[in-house]
Length: 198
Ligand SMILES: [Zn+2]
Image 1 (cartoon, helix red, strand yellow):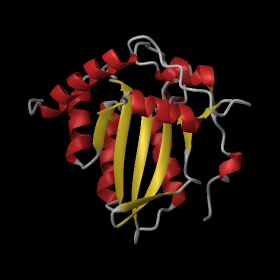
Image 2: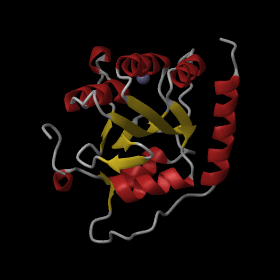
Image 3: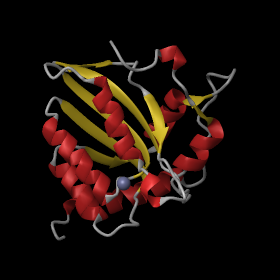
Image 4: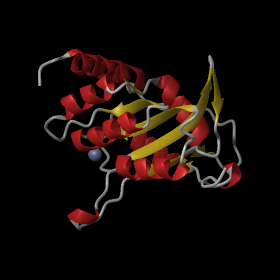
């Protein structure tokens, strides 16, 4: 195992950052992305914990210095040099779903890395750019699983990517209407993914 910090050196997100950015009823301007990697062996999946972490987009007053979370993540994945003889599943929990441009980049990655399966769980649908629906459909067509985060994924992230200081068993605090909102978004996503129109 070459790159990547040791699990104990891994940085975790602070609680408020997680709650502010993953709340599916809020509209924060940043994007956070948590990720985990598993090796697929037959029917089993084996966690590869050294490749578990999170990142955020890079914002800047200068447009050319701004970067969305996904290209940063793609760079990070490339640095792992995942063995092409093995099979992997990468799961991403992202606070905003990929924009059309990032969806394209991810599709390209999947075409070039047939040994990698990708699952994307998004807290919210990023509909700022035209073509976002086609981007999400392209991801699905390229074999990625695209879904909205439900209570289960929010709780998973809370347990796995958030720093609880001394209180490791601190339960996920949830927020009002999390489930209702997640269901609404899931229905909207299902409509987007089924629609063949551009
Ligand atoms: Zn993007």
